[in-house]
Amino acid sequence: MNRTEEQTLALAAVFQTAQLVHNIASSGRYDDDDLQVCLQGILNTNPDSVSDVFGPPAVLRTGLQTLINQLGTSAQNRKVEIARYVIALLHLQRKLDKNPAMLGQIAEGIERARAQTEHYTLTHTNVLANLAGIYSDTVSHMTPKIMVNGEQQYLSNPDNVSRIRALLLAGIRAAVLWRQVGGSRWQILFKRKRIVDTAQQLLRQ
Image (cartoon, rainbow, N blue to C red):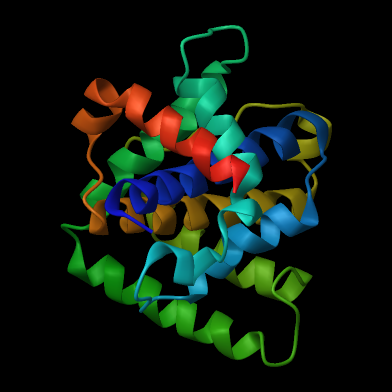
């Protein structure tokens, strides 16, 4: 996998977390496989490549399609909320990178979550609550805060709250990967077509 493909896959993971957050908040629905793929990115903290974290591009199909919808030339499928979440996640990751104390706190929490997965599945309520707690204790205190919009009946469900917070933590992790493989804001601004074309190619694999 070349550098552009690695960058596109990492960015697709950010978009996948944003899409799932939007889905849960607005409809209470989500795909369990999509959720698991996002969450496994949190626990894999020392990969050799982006594909080592997530696996083949097909597992990020939702993220790749969302990326194409959001960055492509047609405005018909764009969603403001998803764009807002992605922008916020990329911004907060840059701020977090300058806060070693908080990074250490997150790393300790991830170790606890990794130990939990020896007894529970990654999407088990206990593991989700732990990952959500990491986010609540760290990133949620940074500004600008990510305000999740949706339907109150879904946002008031404690399990949905845990899923959303765990996904936002997964989004931060994916943003770290995006940075590590050379991703930057200017690339999204000036190389959108190349990113979208690469995402389309990855979808066909």
